[in-house]
Each structure stands twice: as structure tokens, then as C-alpha cells.
Length: 270
Image 1 (cartoon, helix red, strand yellow):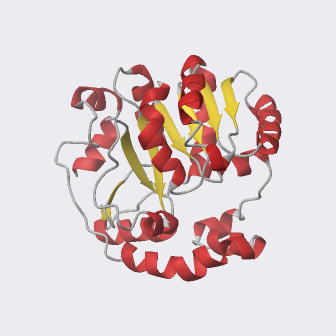
Image 2 (cartoon, helix red, strand yellow):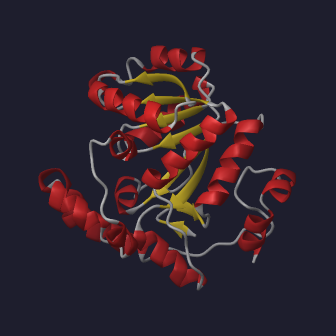
């Protein structure tokens, strides 16, 4: 479906992992797996077309309002795939296949805690590097950072600069890093590092995760959820359903899809 100019695909976590695994094996350009929620709609409300760089984007329903709208349009359950849920699964995939993962953005302290958690949870994971540039100088230092990421042989790059900066950075610089998969993760590494707690599962299921986060960080999140959120919700309510007969998502060779994702193809073309 199209939500405020963003094409959101109906994929569950297993399908996304299959797409990522296929892209890692292919010679195709990099794939960025992004999340669409009300915060995304606020920042990208004027984005009338796909990102303009040489990176392909696969956008998923992260927020419950987006998933609910998809279900209303299709009369089928619409999976909610959050960055916080997807990142651990992608790291497990990288560990099992020997792919190198890099982390770009976030603080030095976050990276220190993250490294401890990764060693305990994914002992065989190969980390190509952790880069914590000064937010004020990211653009001016991007050329050198890109070179470091490329030399490190990064296959999967987790970018944590916050919306919309992380998506814009990937679109401008991702291709030059040589990475095959990009995860604009927002606060997902904070969850993984143990710096921030997620809402209880029951609150996630009923769409109240935003309320939990608001109660824990009211000064930082009040404007996002109480001012920007209602306007973004209105844009989400105007989402339209579109169909791609016989195509899973833009840029995926049909032969690869038919060989690796038969269930997904059937659901996409139904």
C-alpha cells in the first residue's frame, strides 16, 4: 500500500529475512530495510517519490496504525515488523552465515554496552566496526567514514542516526560503503544494548508501545506523540492499496523470488 508517498510492503519477519539472505548472496545494489510508522510519516510527509540514491528500499509496517490500515485495506492480517524485532534476527542470520556487521551512529557508551551484549548473545558474530561520529560533523566526515566502512568489508550496516537523518545518510552514502544490506535502526541498538527498555509484550500487541515510551521519556517524546502524531495518523488514514501483479517488490529478479520465496509470492499476488 502507499502511505503518504511511501510504498509499504506486506511482509512478515521470515519473508524479510529471506529477502535479506538473497540480497547478501546476489550482486545487486544495496538494500535498505526501513520502517514506516507515524514518526516516519511526519518526517517524510513531503516525500512524493522513492529515495533518489542508488540504494533500493524495502519499507515495512513498523507502527500499529500502519498495520491496522493495511489490514483494513486488504482484509488480511498485516504483519508489524519493527526495527527492534528485526535487528536481533538479522544479527542471528549474519552470525550463522559469517557476514560482517557494522554499526554506524549512536554514542561511544552505547557501543561499549552493545559490544558486551553482542559477545554474550552472538559469540560467533563478526563485527566489522563501530563508528560513533560527532552528530555535528557527520556530513563533513562522511567521506572518510565511508572509506573506513568499505575497507572493513562490511556486509550489513546498522545506521542509528534517528529519523530522517539515517535514511537520508543511507540514500546519499550507502552505495559507496559497499555494504549489501542497510538497517536504519533508530533506537533499536539502544534496546539491544540494554540502555532502553521496550514496552511489555501486551502493550506492543494492542498498539500502546508509544504510550509506554512517552511515560518513560516525556520531555523528549511528548511533541512526537502528542503534536506530530495526530497529523501523521490522519495521513496514515488516507493510505491507498496498490498491486504489483507477479512482482514481490521492486528490483527483485523474479527467478530469485520464485526459488526462495514461493509463499511470499503467492501472498503478494493473491
